[in-house]
Image (cartoon, rainbow, N blue to C red; front, side, top):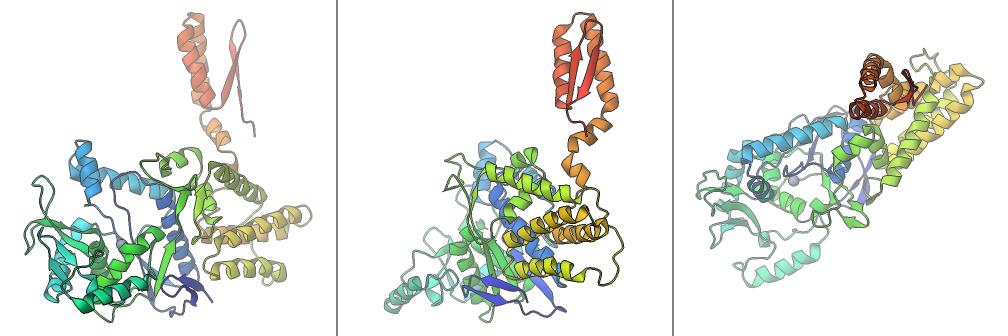
Length: 471
Ligand SMILES: [Zn+2]
């Protein structure tokens, strides 16, 4: 049975939901003020795997992820670039979608933008104010008062803070806590975007967005809430305290958090200029290589990014694809044929995935199975075909091995075949430039041919060419 580590209880717990039930998953989405980086890739790849696996074992999943399309960082960046906020946001969302599609990430069943949910946000702030969970401060901002909740800090296990809060509130319920957070920012700068509310023009704080969206789409029926570990405190703590204030019986059974991505042992940040953008990696590596690389570290552990490790992941994946070469994965499989051998790998794969999505272990099973296929190929191609079929099936559960092995292993070969007419045309052009002694233009074409994997060799009459990669 599947067990998932629950941040709330700090334990691996059985995932006991009935298969007839739809599993509702909420994951905090992107604040679209810049290109998406490897940290985003990791978080959303992990939830992609979780959803793929839940669906694979028979659950129906409803995946909800928000887009934060209004925020100080967005306003500042758009202003800095002298771009309208709307156009900037549209551009950023388009780029995000391109990156996520390239990574073959599951598309959420519903992906509301915060600005589309303004009515819902305003209405729950109104309830929180009326029930005295929130107050208006001297700046006309609306803040949530965490002193009202003695369990504040339970999720992030900062319960000591809670005792401190209780201690304060016993003496005076009017003293505000430094952890009180903004629900509604009063509009102070006329040029900033704003929405009208019963408390005047303004815009929502970050934490209330997710609570309002969860309340709108799921009511009290979320099974898994997820996000990066950096969101645990205060963002998720604030989300749950808001939801509990709306409905005291509100509970989220599973909280799943993904470890940070570190670069040179430091958190990625603008000031350190060490941000690794997804599209930079996609220029150099197939998206399955990035996926495999992410899966080689357990999702709860920090991932220390190095390009060397990414390169090694590429090599491992190439070895796996190499074992699939010349195998017929669509072969028909007689009942119970070599069931013992097949079950060894099958049991290991599911044991790994059922143990809190232990993907490094699951990847290790793929590697061992691929080695076994290589051995088997030599004397029993029929069994090798069946095992190759199993290998691809396990890979697909992880969002891997969707390529034709030849295309993955020899992409240049395919390109060269397709581009042969262009190559011939370019060589003819270059020869005529050489005849006219237009050496500069001839050299440009030589370089262009090199990028297509073609080397030209000149003799005194004509040029011949060879492909660098002959397969
Ligand atoms: Zn959130």
